[in-house]
Length: 414
Image (cartoon, rainbow, N blue to C red; front, side):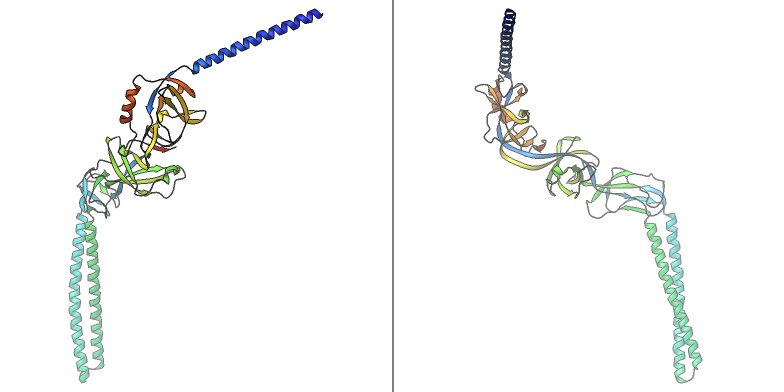
């Protein structure tokens, strides 16, 4: 029995030693493989770290609206006899744009004029009768003083004068009433001549839409045309509270449209809504844009850039050089002499288009990896591009970050 247990003990020891050696070899193999993998050089592209001016821009989208818009409609009913203008035509202040059939209203004016003539004739008759009654009263008063006329005769003369004077006053009122009726008829007749009128604003406007054709029967307030003021024109954008408090009245804005890809339009913030809507959590911002050539039209989709901040002489790197490693933001700094890339954590400021401002560390210089960094470890050998010495100098001059003349970059605060 003792020999049996001894052999079992020996077998267990041998088996343990063999297992330990196998484990050691596997561990060494995996570490060697890992070491070889991390030490394999990675082909990368690099770019120079630069110091230049960068802008913090807000990029928004919106729609164009006319500065003002109103409908032209008749105040009276009638048939539309003439329509002088059409869609797209210019309209001057107080220009005649439509005419209604005026025969009925002209007849009302003629009738009012005839009534006025009758009223004026009645007034003349009443004035003459009043003057005769007044002279009769004066004669009766003279005779009464001399004792020739009795009291009853004097009373009769006074009553006759008062009656004629009352008729005269009625005739005067009738003339005034008839004149008012004539004036009303003339006003209604003038309503058949439909004018375009407005207060303030640009000297001319344009026709936006036409709603009826010539010959149509119109009732009061039936829309005929819409008149638009598009010089200047208004761009409306909607912003969240993130940018709302950074926008101020009078701030400059640059507007562009796909309809004019090589052209930009300058404007200023004209109005800022005092509230953010609960449904969208956004506020309406209106930008006034000079539009002398009337290239911009209401309803167009536009892009708007608003500059918030400009920083000069700051350290910037290409945006595609920024990566994350273990939830830490950083870049791979390329050592071009030893051909090694090392991960360096950074703190970013303004990110504008293709460039990002590096706030920390402040003394950053050299080159950063812009392509191939997803294959790199924290410290890794790299293979530089064959012509990197030539391109590094030219990149520094050709690939400058955006300055104030570049209107096509977007800036965000990280």
